[in-house]
Image 1 (cartoon, rainbow over the protein chains, first blue to last red):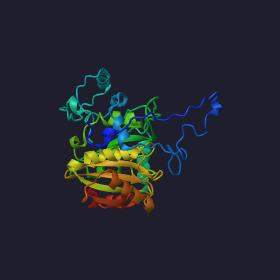
Image 2 (spheres, rainbow over the protein chains, first blue to last red):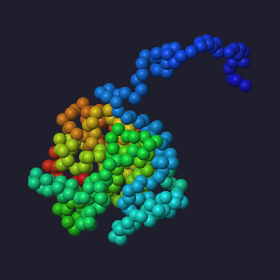
Image 3 (tube, helix red, strand yellow):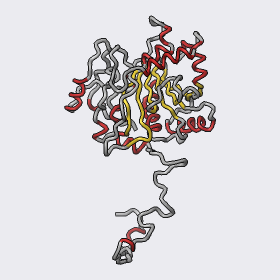
Length: 119
Length: 226
């Protein structure tokens, strides 16, 4: 039930539709699928740049590609040292040349901590 | 002094490009080959390189090695990033800042710019430095990297890179820009930093030209400071 007394008496009506028969693509209006007033999408002053907002980047963080370890070797003391289920990561770790005298640190990380979002 | 830096640069560039670590046991690799842009990934405006350095603690065996020469030798290229996915790939497989030992620095710079004062892109530049309490730097660093990779600074090509420096009492994060005399650009970088990093009101921001940093470093007393 709606909380608003007004909402109880709303009549439902079909949205009015105007039908136009198109026989040829040239019948389409010239501004078909553009933003009214012109398309501004993806331009920045002084030229076009690839711009990403934080929310968009955070959204990609959990994508499968983003979770794949990089092809190059992260130095061992920077690496999140966790046994990971992923077979690709295991392979990757085996390929990593082990440096004998590099301190081994931070092996206590668990899987669940790996992709925690800090929002 | 210029001779020293010429020699330094030569040293850094002389490693075999693209072939991984050179055989002399030095970790300096300055080129990882072309950046890959796999289809379906979100390309960044610029490719970036992540560098890592760790300075021996002050009072260690060789104080003079903390200078520029020592710095370039301690500097290690970790990897390069051309897409958003590649960024998260490396970021999510690295330990948190709070688990890095003091005197570790991470440098995320546009590919082609070395995180050194002497690089041509930096020689006329400077940096904004923000001091943060230990618990605040992790998130600030993450936000800072995203802001740069996503081109949120809107200063043309002014931003060269960002650095996080792990120290004992606090951490420093810095944004390096190309032209220290460009006041509009440095002011804009400061404003974007304030807006995007959710900085505590009392955080201290300071702008330093690399030239001043270089002078300070050459003065023995000051070189002990960060």
